[in-house]
Structures are given as C-alpha cells and as structure tokens.
Image (cartoon, one colour):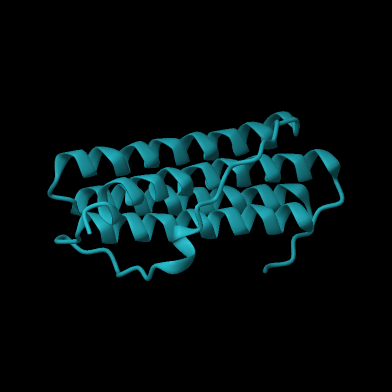
Length: 151
C-alpha cells in the first residue's frame, strides 16, 4: 500500500477510491439490459457518491467522529469467481463482481484504519469499512436469494 504522509493524503486516496467505485457502478449499470439491474447499480453509485462527499466533508471540516457497528458476513464473496463486466453479463456475474469490489473497499478502509495512530481517523476508516461491508452483504443476500435458490 502507498505510504501516506498526511491525513489529507489518506483522505484524497480514499476519495479517489470512491470515485473509482462510482465510475465502476455507473459503467456496470450502463451495460445492464435489465432495467431493475441498472437501477440497483445506479443506487450503489449514488451511495458511493455519498461516501466520497462524507470524506470531503471530513477533510474540509476536520470532523472524524463516525459511529461503527458490527455487520454480519456471509462470506459468499470469498468463494465465487467474478468475470469481467460485459454488456451481456448475467445477473449472477454482476453480483459477484460487485461483491468483490465491496470486499476490496472494505479491506482498503480496514488497512487504512490500522495504519493511523489518530484515533478519530481510525474510527472514520472503521466506519467506512462497515459501510462497505454492508454493501457486500446486500449483494450477498441478493445472490443468495436470487441465484443460489434458483439452482
């Protein structure tokens, strides 16, 4: 992982990661022929916009007091392999890809929280990790409900 010299460096890196997630979900939505799938991925893009805005507010206002909570992990993302996004991507493949991205975002924020000695910033990154784990859980539940039960 990149070495950071300031809190602002960390926040800029995190905001860039959120922008990449926004772009990913927006592009994935555009490739979905199913309107319901488009809306699901656009909703996630909007949530990532909210994360980026939260990080910007933290940077601007120097407020690092977010609450954390425990989120269950079904671990489905640990056992499935994702394909690259495509226009004809099946719903199951899109869910797997989304799970993997959320898992990566969770790991990023967890690693960032472990690399800071600032307790307020540590709490902020832990809270953001929780948000990403909630997203992954939503995709895992969707996968469990609509993919695994069909088989």
